[in-house]
Length: 463
Image (cartoon, rainbow, N blue to C red; front, side, top):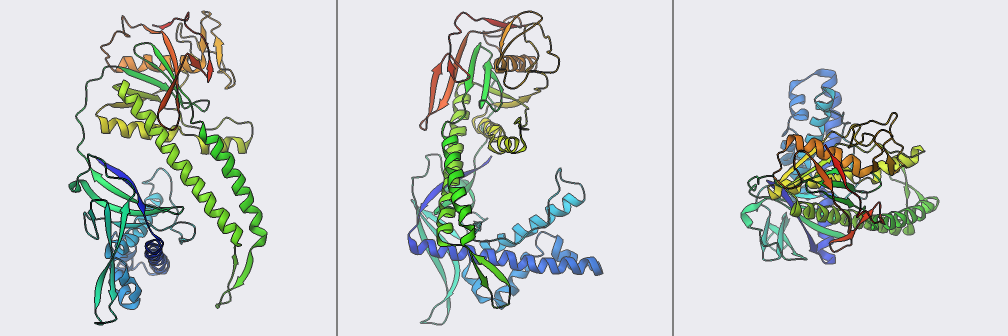
């Protein structure tokens, strides 16, 4: 099982400038090869020369041009060969994905690669072979940069740069696990991302399971096989961060009118952003980084907590479509939804812990009464959070009813030897709510929809 270990690096000003220079050169190589690929593409369309197609559409065709480019552009020698090779392979991979889309081998067609702007996105440095081009001594990470000309001897010698991991490596880490390394930059911070190969734990027997109903109101609402209903509230900090991101973005966009037009030597024109806009853009990138990291931590914390209590977690197959009253509102709901990432995190934690992840069919689960299986014609509006079945009179909490229907589907497929499943009947005895508080999971007993309520007298069953 491959996974990524992301460690923040302590980088001084000189080392940061060196790494930026390496990234710029790799980005330049990518754009240069793309320019050549555009020429080869045009020539292949005209001549159908198989030699041109072999260079353009094979995995190593563009990569094999790097030795000749090093002779033509000596500054490429200052970058390690693995970094240069992977810049070319990244472009070749994008071209092949474009070809697969044209042949219908992809669910969604990919466009032809575009030129990359280094100022907009830092080009990562990838060392794709174990311990080739980098080494680790304790918490000190040494990177090879290529060859530089020695002014005293006139000969080229290898150049290295040293950084330090900001935190100690985890206890389970072993050097033999490492498969590759990527150096990335997010905002002003540098990270080392190790791809490690870990043994897959053996599958454990399924005991206690939970069926989750994901939605926009909360991250998910689940009912387990022992009658415990759990509402997982959305991370509280996202609204605060989103509000701050919108403020900074608005201030940055106002500085657009202060840009200065610059005429290059070749006669082309460009707009140079103001100093204030550059600073606001850096602040915006930092806010996005904080949001990504905090979201990742919250989702992993919730997933780990679920798999500490349950042997199987099953989530509804709902895909966010947005239910807002306007186009902008629907787009915002789709973009800010964490449902897709939550499912990916659950699946990854399940594999790592030797437990079970699955999905159940959510079609009609909300409007179907779990007691008598009556289906409400036309569905139930999203703003209705609780409703009463017109056929049998059972009062339902919207998300809980959907989760119970999902649990009924799961129990038909998975044999769960626990007290909650007795004669095909599952009862909801206890309700609770989980909220990520930045350090862990804080439990709010008896909360539904974020409002603390008394449901001690409620006992609902499914057949």
